[in-house]
Image (cartoon, rainbow, N blue to C red; front, top):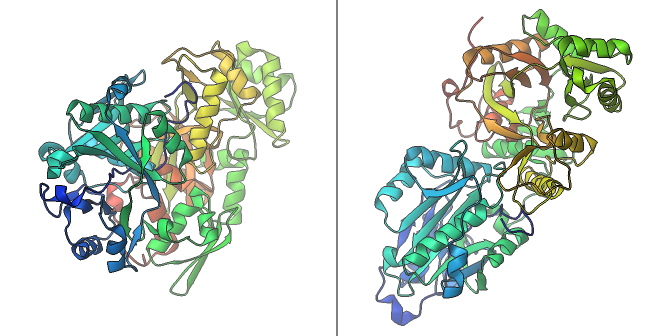
Length: 599
């Protein structure tokens, strides 16, 4: 990323390549009526169509669930006039990077430390690309389309950014060579579908992908690289302008469909105001033909109605969760007792008495977590108080928790990673490791600046729901690792800035649904049954998600379903609320997701 702001490498728009319409005398040299299938939709090169009516008819033939885009139409207004109720001008700006001697050094810049930009190596890369698309709210493409294009479409270039430490794909971009595709006399190229995983925690990925693609086409002798970005995406526009792109007067045409609806008509204001955790449920309900009435957008309260059945929800909490079950989840002591009676393993703990006995317990178990007995979103929790820390640090943690609730729990800290299992109607539908927030040094920015930048990225990716607090606890965690907030972190150095993995405190999430063991799924379902709650997030500490060892931590009565995309949590939730499955059937089979064993 640039030395000004490490947060600017995550433009939140699908970027699309466009360029000026070719003069009529150049058209004869080009292929005719060119359409390129990319899976999420077709690229329709308008300058290759001689007849506007034919072009409008092609756009009207868009398949359901796709997002076709017409670029370079010579007479956009005439094309729109041919189907004014079905087509519209995309409200985006077009930017162009001309390949000159001045752009050579920029294009050849190295990717950030710890990241490799490369082309696809096997079909799993295509699957990883789709996961990034989904996390960015973009339309995924069939794996076979991506892989077939990679193998056989010489004009299409796919690049992925891979984190060196674990091989995870954290970003992707698609390039199209116009000269190879349709003998473009302008020798152009375009950049499409740039996407960076919002939870990547690696600065500069978007810049690295853009520069790598630009260098690829510059080396091939192309004249320029085009892209398009939403007119109101100031962060992305700022990024592209720093890379040397300049705005050009080019339009794009799209079809009026459900995916594009926010671009040509304003959605109901209250639905648009829902946070991501309520919006994912509303969108799934609307997709099924279920009526959604927003009662309070700020709290996510909705009434869902279909066929005479009406259900009140507040995000993933519905009226089918009893007040008793809610109280059991709210009181961590009661939750522990209920699940322990059901045979679930829980860590040792005591209710704080705020005297020497608390420190005696700490010395006995070695390391503890201090938390208020009631509360949510990780507020007031301190992780990793050790006997060596002394009584003062324990007293500070108790005081911090007591600010949230008078009763405080001191719990033995167990080894392992924080695993969240989402249980809906008696089965696990998603599993994810929740990871504490960390920053990666650039060699130019202080820890404080890196935290602020990472917090902005997390907030942008979660609709403002996730931020990293710059408070005493963060400062203490940083100091524990031997740094201060004003130190410049060396390039590539990873620094955990909070011990808690709660998403509202800036934590990130890593989907492990396909890896989690049946035993851990059984434990989660058993815990939910013991509490008597139909929809819940069960938190366990586990050494290995594929193993059987665990320690129960707590249960959440309102798990954030949006945190687990692309797992079908909202689909399972609507299935539970409306057992008849109104509207379209879900695109997944319960047998494909982890399920508890009987017993």
